[in-house]
Amino acid sequence: MTHVVVDPVTRIEGHLRIEAEIEAGQVTSAWSSSTMFRGIELILQGRDPRDAWAFTQRICGVCTTVHAIASVRAVEDAIGATPPPNARVLRNLIMAAQCVQDHVIHFYHLHALDWVDVVSALSADPAATATLAQSISDWPESSPTYFTGVKARLQAFVDRGQLGPFGNAYWGHAAYRLPPEANLLAVAHYLAALEWQRDFIKLHAILGGKNPHLQSFLVGGMATPVDPNSQAALNIHTIAALRSLIARAKDFVTKVYLPDLLAIASFYKDWAGYGAGVGNYLVYGEYPMTEGKNAPKYIPSGVIRNRDLSKVEAFDDSKITEQIKHSWYKYDGGDDQGLHPAVGETHPTYTGPKPPYDLLDTSAKYSWLKSPRYDGQPMEVGPLARMLVAYVSGHERVKELVGGALGALGVGPEALFSTLGRVAARGIETQVLVEKISDWVDELADNMGRGDLRIHDSDRWDPSSWPKDSSGAGFHEAPRGALGHWVHVKDGKIARYQCVVPSTWNAGPRDAAEQAGPYESALLGTPVVDPEQPLEILRTVHSFDPCMACGVHVVDTKGRELARVKVR
Ligand code: NFE
Ligand code: MG
Image (tube, rainbow, N blue to C red; front, top):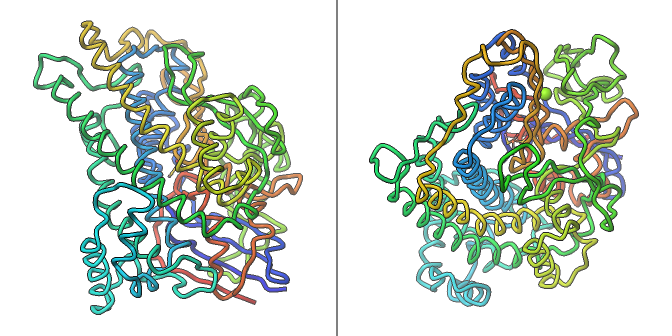
């Protein structure tokens, strides 16, 4: 048996440590640990709940809007504020844009290099690359001259010894399978996607003043004036600017991201057989289509258990608990219980090992992540969960795209329960959202046209209008999955605040019943050709798009080393 430590896992947000045991070339046990703590939940106590979103938004610099949205919704739920239609539409636009940008960045910049060998791209024939590119898409930048230029650019990085983002990976690993031309194509689009994401996210600058960390959220609505006749508000020129940003985004997703995803996946179909994980999927739902708490959502909520695609259960938030048997926290009532987040506790209690340590004691506490559970069960959250629930719920566009992807790869729906399924679901979700997002621009324009310029419910702005003691929950589907904030407001101040975050669901440690979390389960059976270069472990872990900053709500305060892979 070989014990492998990957710490920190790179090309993620925050710090994640994976330990795994490998026998006969396969992972037989795995542990996921997040190794730092800050505690945003604690610093919110005693503050004005109307300010909470600005603090929680700083939990993460990647999913920058998501904690703001969850927070304003939780506070609105507690104090009884109802945002008007323009606020809902503006929020939908902001959230969908976040998801689209985040997914494209994940595919090219955080995940592609697990599948794409940059060094091999240097031996590609640019003319053959152009032929390949033109065979999968009518994207205009596909000429031999274009790929000759990309190859020369890459060669120049290498000649200068300045590999930049390509400096650290397992180049030449036996598990890389793309021909040189496909590698060059992917590298070209890695670079193109850097430009693309910078362009597209101007949408956030327009609607939120800046990105990351938009400034326009407000409990009860949005702080973005809407007025077709004002230069100082979102007006008809803004609508035109949004339309052109979205059109360019859709072009790139449809003609570059999705064709690349299918082309790369076709060389790695065996990865539809690895990385399934817990087989339970949880979705809170997102993009309300009308006002009010029970509004229908474009991406529906629901629960799927045991990979059973014959039915979706209704989501019931009272079934959520967080456990801490293996997390560096203590609970007043004992560490073996699970607490609902409305009565959750955050008492950090580091019990070792003492850094710098060799191995974690996984029989004891071993992560700063808690273990969220639904009805006592571990749940995977994220794009795969959302696309599965939407698929089984009969979402037309999702059904079409899932069917199309499965057909193109020649695999059945069971292939979705895998590392590759996770990657494909993320692409499908991006396509669905980049198509849908323009409807919300139309809705905003229609509202303006009808003279509905309301952006805020001011009836509940004054704390004297609030109940003396109330609680609320705010739910959101962040790019990485189901996100919930729970707030208890007492005498106008925050008495308790709890966040249960997508990466906490997915990357959390074992629970009191010793059930493994989704990462830990997904790694079982993963082939590892060379324990010194555990590329395959990264494939499965990265397929979830880890964000430890969100997961623990932490910040890195220490110097960082690039990576440590330890085999014993
Ligand atoms: Ni920091 Fe996050 C998303 C949230 S993941 S990226 O998406 O919430 O835990
Ligand atoms: Mg929390």
